[in-house]
Amino acid sequence: MSPEILSSPTVEYSPVGEVRRIIRRICLLRAVGRAPEAARLELNELASASVHLPGLGGESVEAIFSEEMSRVTDASLVAELMAPLLAQSLGPLLRTSNVGSTAPPIATRTPSAAPPANGSPPSIADFIDGMLAQERPA
Amino acid sequence: MSTATVDKPIITAAHIPTNAAATSAPVRSPNSTTPKTKTILLGFDLGTNKSCVLAGAAGTADITVSKVVPSVVGYVKDGIVDGIVAGNRTILFGDDALTNMLHVKLVAPLQQGVIQHPDAARDFLKHIRSLADPSGQAEIRAVVGMPANADEKARDDIRRCAYGIFDRILLIPEPFLAALGYRDDSRVGQSGYIDPVVNALFIDIGGGTSDLCLVQGYFPTREDQISIPFAGDAIDGLLSDELDRIYPNNGLSRIKVREIKEAHGYVGPSRKPLEVKVIMGGKARSLELGDVLAQSGNALIDKIYPALTTLIQRASSDSVVTLLQNIIVTGGGSQIRGIDTLLQKKLTDDGYETPKVRLAGQDYKRYVALGALKAARAARENQWQVLLG
Image 1 (cartoon, rainbow over the protein chains, first blue to last red):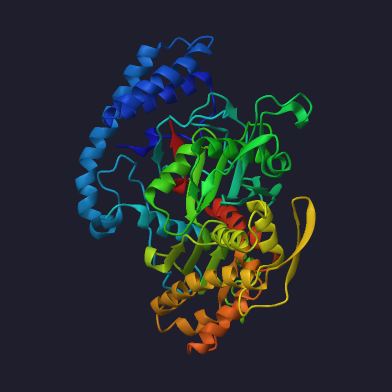
Image 2 (tube, rainbow over the protein chains, first blue to last red):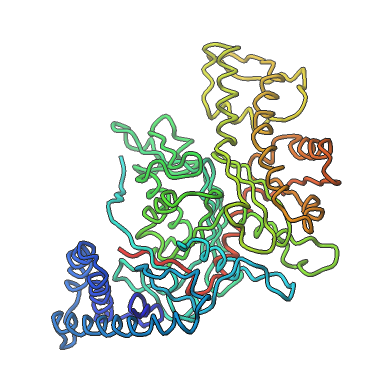
């Protein structure tokens, strides 16, 4: 599942974008079996965001729902196809990753608890990687 | 009385996959439709008795907020007439709450380093946010210190309380943050400077817990950290019990007892005479507290010394000699007189090779928060955990 559907922190704010973002999260929560949370989001945030909109620029909530659900489904399919291929090609590097977790399995670099081989002090971000690696279940 | 509720479930989603810088285009709170115009980074030491917050805008090296706040929330009691509490506020925080303790119900959100009263914790976090971002318009990314080896429930409790207050969060053990904060970045790499992040043993004595941590150039594992639920508050408790035994009905509040400890506390052989003047029943009295203070202070040594030697023994033989030169005591407990020299003496007496135990220094209240702010500034975009509703 593409982690990009969870958050798009660099996207410019717009009311329509906000509604779309909430709907995307609802779809994602539904896709991972968290229907009660999705329902809560729909009742609270979506209702609130929609109320403040003067209009959706021609887009209906239903249409956005349909579009976002399609994107989430596509992303899930891609993830399903890619996961075994990635596991095969990356092999041991993935042993510390959180396979099966609902949290997005993103780490593009393998966190390590070991100091760098060149003897230079590790960066703080490297330390955080080490911490996050420890937090993941084995 | 509380303004907070914590019934919302949360999802923590780590590792947002983007390389965007924290200063990039406007970002939004996950639970708000209000556009966020800027990002503020918070280094937050959420302590049992005192908290410290340092804050600055993302993408800068500035520290725009630096405050130490007693970790206490005061809910104004019913029936207080107008004008007694400044601004007729219903909730007070920190020193304001303590100053008005007659008119408020004081609630300490934390006990032994973990959240005990979630509603009060949420109110306290809102206050911290307001200190860092009075406009309420910024995205807040907070690195929060946790006791070493805090369990998942304690971590979840923080996340749950932070939901809707902070936008992104990272929870990092306090002694490691203390090492980061204590590190003199300008001297890293210079000959003769022992980088505390590369090889040191930190003893962080707070209000609720004493945390010991080996910091040896990688993120400490669980085996590198020991957290003991015995620290400043426990010393206060012992002191209070002993005072009650010797001076029944003394009427000294726990806050007063803490003040006595902070002013006169020490470890090592009993120092007598040590007379402390207190007000009991409206009358000034001079109490001989030499033995009482020694007993309560030495109880802390009895707890942390075995943990200290345990961690030293876990260090590799290649690193241990240098490590012994870099044992650093920080947190409020570092202000107990003689703690460094007594620990060093005990290590020497037990045959450890030229140990050197030092105090972190006057900035001890801020090292965890400073380390947290450094971590916030260095965290990659995909390392932040997003609090979703």
